[in-house]
Amino acid sequence: MSKLIYFTILNFFLINSVYAENNKFLDMVQSKVKQEMKDPDSTKFQKLREIKNSVGESVACGEVNAKNSYGGYVGYHLFSYSSDGIVILNSPKDSDYYRNKFVYDKSGCAGEKEEFLARNKDMFKNYCSVAYELFTDVIVNNKSNVDAITHAMNNYQKYNLNVFNKDLDKAKIDLLANLEQVLQSKETVKKIKKDKNGMFKAQYMFICPINMEKNYIFEK
Image 1 (cartoon, one colour):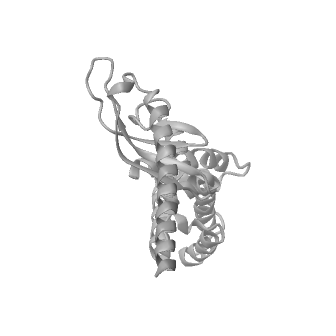
Image 2 (cartoon, rainbow, N blue to C red):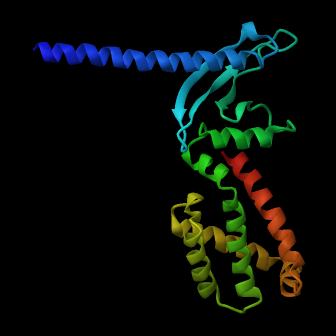
Image 3 (cartoon, rainbow, N blue to C red):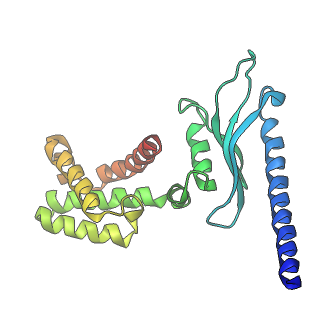
């Protein structure tokens, strides 16, 4: 019985020690976030929590609200505090929104999938590369849709693109839908066929990952 009491008391102190450390971290974060506000004393927090991201960093996530210059509350906005600093997600119309969204996702606050994509930005480029090869297989190499999509799905798994869609049947449908859109555009088909110097592919590979990343952000 005495051993049980000893371990119970020991566990109580250990748990409270960890709780105090967590509180200390979150208290520090709240203090720093308040300094970013127009009216620090009016700052309110909700859904405040500490997480460990995929690289083992302690990160604070939550929502923050404070009064603006006119004395009115602006509404709650997502924020993160990580080794990359504090980011507060305001309107997508803000010039720094995409930069902040990238840092927020990278911190781990948006979830494991979003963090993985933020830390592996080549995923967007790889997806676009798989899609473009599918187009050229059908348009230039005269492969059947079946052979072309089989090759594309092999590449999809090779590049671990199931982070976008783990359901391979749905992933295949998405790629075939992209192919169908391209085939319906006579101008695009013509450009792919005549792209001997690779200029059109270079343009596609520049624009596609950017658009894909933006669309991915807005869909969440």
